[in-house]
Length: 164
Image 1 (cartoon, helix red, strand yellow):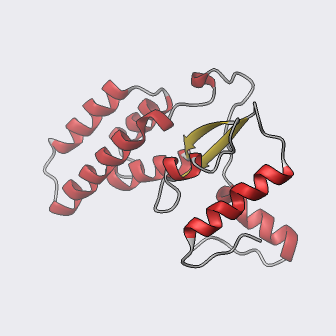
Image 2 (cartoon, rainbow, N blue to C red):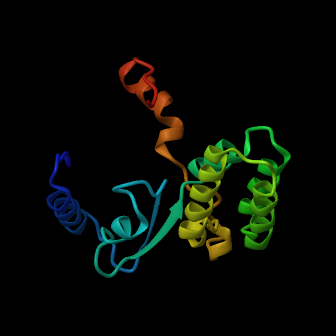
């Protein structure tokens, strides 16, 4: 097991050592995805890729689109356009959409949320590219265990737990 409380460096070293000992990953491409939250930043995850292997990091699309909907509104026309712009990796369009939203009469909280969304997208824009846009024609989606967690726990433990 790889449980570690307060010893992130030791955990990363153990995981890296485990991968080196149990898998022949030299020359392979390893796909990584997360929401880029604390502890799951691209640089941290890419540092776990063993020597000789290539890491491809993807921003978890579910969390990215969820942040857009949270900021712009779930059924807002601008949110739908922003989601389409993200899916097509159209940075010019997303800038126009966010500028349009900003021009509306926003509350202080809405303005803060928008600023956080802009920074999030700017920081992670290169990781939003789909596998096809990166040249991996046979890979359509990078799945997230979170989106299937309920099915896994129900099947394995008959408990039907969900993420909190």
